Image (cartoon, one colour):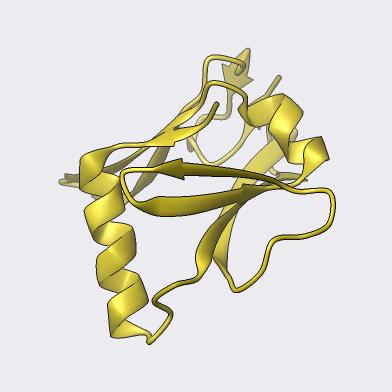
Length: 107
């Protein structure tokens, strides 16, 4: 199961409202690339793909393709704000290592 914190859910809903994307799901992807091997991607999507898994957490629909799911199982998505900026953070127990800049991971 994949979850999203209440703080992250509020931010997702805020962005969806500002961009007239209410009702769409949040697509979570793992893509090859980045200095450690994989990187995360997320964006709004209006429909679930044929092979996708759908999760709902804190009122946000999450869409995940089968390839990404194997890397995202048991992941929690949070939203953090700090001195170096703000953004979504993936708390992923499947990660074995990350790069120095923190934008990619290895599993």
